[in-house]
Amino acid sequence: MSSTTSGHHGQSERADTVPREVDADSFRALMSGHPSGVAVVTTIDARGVPRGLTCTSVCSVGLEPPSLLVCLDNRSGTLRALSESGVFAVNLLHTRGRGAAQTFATAGPDRFSEVAWEPTERHAVPRLTDDARAVAECRVLHTLPAGDHTVVVGAVEDVVFRPRARPLLYGERRYAGWPRPPEDSGTVGG
Image (cartoon, rainbow, N blue to C red; front, top):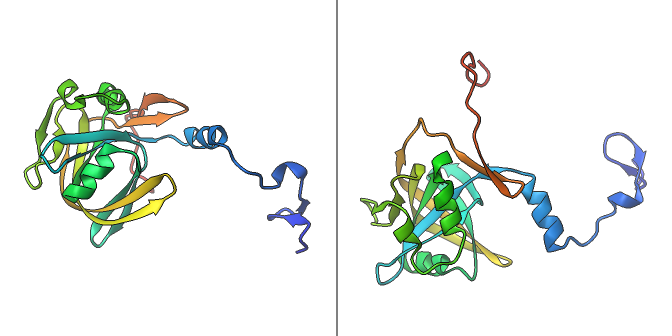
């Protein structure tokens, strides 16, 4: 294949496919078109004060050990507190958790006064009792600098589920609920 062909179809490269520098607005538009679940990442600082923020950058990592990752802004007080404590919780929100998502997406002196929460049993990090459909309590395994964010990999040490609650999604700069399955739907591959 010559350097003037592209992909699997043998078409000539076009001027509009030439890589170019991507600005912040273009990148936001790209990622906004890829809906994701909404979480509130919580932890406690060195004085035991709860900290948290809304996060859509959550991903499973592996099963051995069960682990996940979150990406947090380097300027975040939640990241600083998480680095101090070494523990955090990922509160995966359900459709009625939109208010919590909005509360933790903005700066405020005491976001936790706006939501119902309790400390988890293992590490005493905040668990959103009314707004989360599932909570993963984690211990920090690794952190990795990634531009203006830090990737935090956590070993999942405990989970709490509310399985009937539908997940909250975020995409195209708005919230939506996971659609209810049709009555006759089967399992994947079934």
